[in-house]
Length: 444
Image (tube, rainbow, N blue to C red; front, side, top):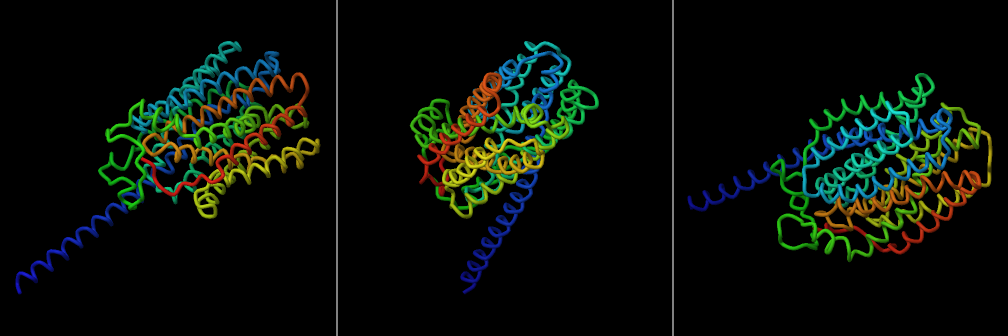
């Protein structure tokens, strides 16, 4: 009898200990998720204040130095090519390193490049420094994909990913508004120098706040914690190899390649507005420096809401079907592009309304492409797969840079919007090819 009582007490103690351990794990996860979430939002927003400053300064630089739109477009394109290729390479490296160090170094390098641009005067030097900054800028997002897929289950990933992805809109809004004020008050050089100093300071905060995966802190993996169903798509080696990434996770993954092609066309439109909106609004719609900056900022602000809502819709309504959600957003974007093209108005209210709506619908698919790429590439190669979608995106951005500048020089801004409409239709087609793709299980 005493033996039975002792055994029951032992089982109860084990259950109590197990329950207390789970409480501890849940508490640690909640703490680190909050800390990492706001740190990633702050950190990635800061990347953009030392990136989109060139967009803000471009109209004034065109006037000061007599550059053509095609010449400035080549600078945008060179950045996009280097950034796009660098994003995939950075993703491969980031999957094998500590995200905390990787992201902090990228921000410091970006800030130094921006500072040097502000002290230069030659278009050759601008292009060289801006291209170099593309290498460091490419180190910003892969750590985000790595950390998000390691800390969140698929059912929660879309909404949180949308929140962190919105950080680049926060950074864009800050530089479009603050940079426009600096441009008008102190000249274009201040648009590079002041954000660079701010970014250097925030890089130190980012390094102090970030940590790597749950396992690096002695916590169980998200799969173990949540009891998730796992699909194993790799060898039993503990560390994913470069060969595995290419031959097992990337090359045979047809759905991932469809996402990449969709992103190519989405980014032609997205980077078209990103790089050229202030110039277009000033030249074609009669906006002032501050007004064009404010309208472009509104485009980014509504884009942030569009990205978050798209993530939530894909989680809660479409049950992980990211591409199907993107399709509906793209249909509405095509309609808005056509209307904005045909209703050529000097009314800043009309222009603002269209930018408001287009920002919402272009950033929804842009956000979901990143989630879809990370999920399709498997957790162990999430940063590499996400980097590949980014590479295709910024190849589209390269086409947008010099392409939009050249088209605008030769045929005007109306032709640019016709070009955007064709790209939107092609992007929609590739989302249709992935119509039934869904994320319900974790791929390792």
